[in-house]
Image (cartoon, rainbow, N blue to C red; front, side, top):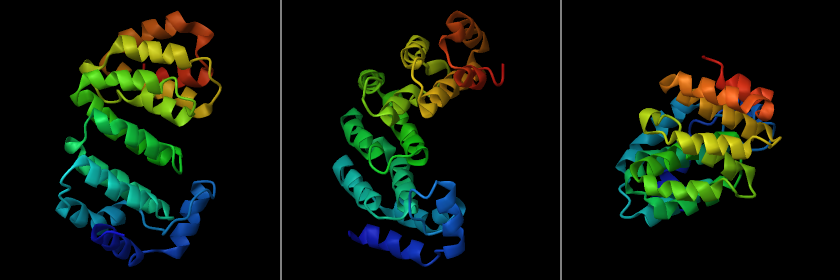
Length: 221
C-alpha cells in the first residue's frame, strides 16, 4: 500500500465496530465485508487525508482509488468514491473508461451510484463526453447501463432532454429492477425542473414503461 492508503487503513481500523459491521453486512445482503463505520464517522476519520492528498495526475489519483478498491471491507470503496469526488476536477473524459472499469468490480448500487456522480460531473464539464454514455447504454453489464441512464442527474436546465428520453425508451423493455428503477429516478429528477415535459413523455410511452419506472417518474408530479 502507498502511504496514503496505509493512513486511511489505520484510521478506519481504529474506529471499526464489529456489531455495526454485522448489521451493515446484512443490509447489503451479505455480499461484502464491513468494518462497521458509518458514513459520518468515516468522513471525519478520512477527510483530512483526502484533502491533504494532491495527486499529480489523474493516473496517480486512479491508482490510489484502485488500491482502496482492492481492500476487502466495503467502507474502503466508499472512501475511494469520496476521493474521486474531492479531486474530480483533474479527471477528464479519458478517465471515464477506468471509472466504468471500477463500476464492474464488486458491483452493487452503493458504489455504482457513487461513481454516477463522478462520471456525471466529468460529462457535464465536457458535454462531448456524453458519446461515451451512448456507448455505455449498450454495454452488456447492466450496472454500466444504469450509469448511462443516471449520468445527467442534477443537471436541471443543462439536461439533454432528447438523450434522456431516448435512453429511457431504449432501456424500457428491460426487466432488471435496477434499470427500471434508474429510468424512473432519472425522469423524476428532471421532472423537478420541467414537470410538463415528463408528463408528456409518460403519456406518450404509456405501458411501454414498467409500472415501477412510471411510479418513480411520477412520484412528485
